Length: 380
Image (cartoon, rainbow, N blue to C red; front, side):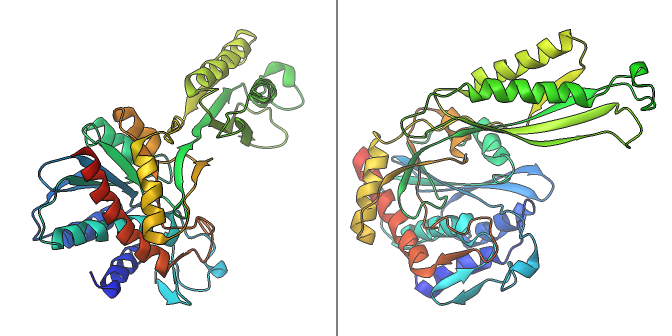
C-alpha cells in the first residue's frame, strides 16, 4: 500500500469522534475497507451506536489475533489544543489528533497490515483475526463481550496495539475501581442524636481500607508495588442537616502477589465489620480487571522483540505496564500468549495535542505484517 493511502486510513479514523461512544462509526469505516475481499466479518452490538467489529482473514493455519479499541478518551478543554482534536493535522513529521497515539495508530497499522497481506495475492499460510472493541477506556467491556462470545477462544496468540514505543509490554497491573455507599437518617443538625450520619462510616471505611491496603508491602519483581487510592467522597445535602446518604470511591492497581479475589474479600470484610456495628454500607465494583501474567518467556514475545529489531533497527525491551488493557479480558479466554506492542510512544496519551510520529506509524504497518508471517511459520 502506498504511504499516502496508509496515512489516509489513520487520519480518517482520527476524524471520527469516538470519544467514549459512537464506535459504530469506526466499525462502519473499517467494514468498508474490507469490502470486496474474501474475509469474514462479524459485528457485535454492545449498545446503541456501539459496535464491536471482528474481521478474520485467511481460511486455514495458525490464528493470530490483532486487538485494538475503537474508542478514545474525551478531548477535554479545547482551548488547550493547538488544532481541532477531530480534524487531524500532519505537521513536522507528526499526525495530531485525539487517539493518534492511544490507539488509533495501532488499530490503523494492523488494518493496513491485513490489507497488504490480502493484496499480496499470495496464499496466506495462516489467519489473522482483528478484534476491534468498544469501551476500553472506561472498562474493557467490549473485550469482555468478545471474550464471552468466544471470539478469542481459538486464538494461538494475540497482539494488542496499545502504545509501547515498539518495546514489548509483557505484563501489566490489574485494576479495581470500587464504590462504597452509605445510608443514614436525616435530621436537623442541632439534634444529631436523632439521626444517623452517613458520612462517618465512610470515614471509618476509608481509614480501615487504607491501613489494610498499605500493609501489602511485597513488591512484584516486574510490576513493583500494589497501590490504593481513595479518590472521591461525597455526601449530604446542606450544612445544617445530618446527611442521610454518602459515597466514596477508590482505585486499586493489583499485582499477581495480591490478586483481585483477595482484595475483594478484604474490602467486603471491612464492610461486614462496620455494618455489624450499625453502619449501612454496600460496596460495588466497576469493571475490575485482573493483572496480565508475565509473558516474557513466550515464543510470541521473543519473536516480537526480534521482529522489531529486524524491521526498525533498534533494540526492543521487555517492559511492564501500570495500566490495564483489554488483555485482562482476553487472557481469560485461554492459555495463548498475549503481548502489547504498538507504534505510539505513549508520551501524549490522554493529553491535549496528542500525536503519533508518521514514521513510527508506517513502521508499525510493516512490522505487524512481518510479525504475522513469522508467527505463522513458527507454528506451521
